[in-house]
Length: 157
Image (tube, rainbow, N blue to C red; front, side, top):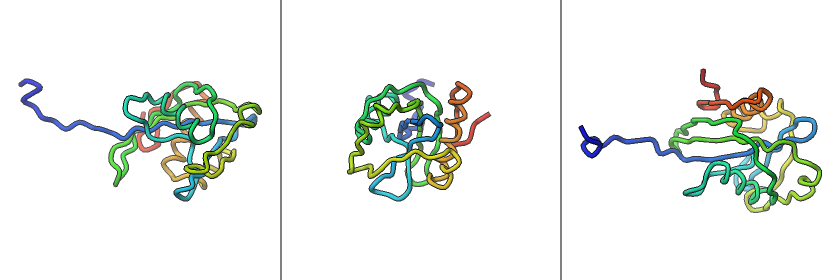
């Protein structure tokens, strides 16, 4: 049977990328959106033709006004949403933000109203559960110099 004879549906996930930035004591930077409650990591959905690392860098520039180097991939998460469909989410390592980068941060005021560094043990109270799981897994991957593959924020063995 040829490809033209088989019409099979394939996944077409919405794809997003975010970045974990840290301060000198390993607190993680979170941003507070203006359009919904709670906190997020810097990032967002990719544009057509954009790679995950390019999208992550663009979102950081849009949301925080800075262009620090974006490091390696910490986590990839297959996380379908009940109403939004399939999602594939990438988390990159932004490393420690130097005082120079911190001095240049300017939240856009449109999407992002504020930013703050938080202890890792605070993220469960600040983030939606699956994002909190993703952040914990990405933090663990960073510590282990590894990349985590997740499903719904849970490491897949």
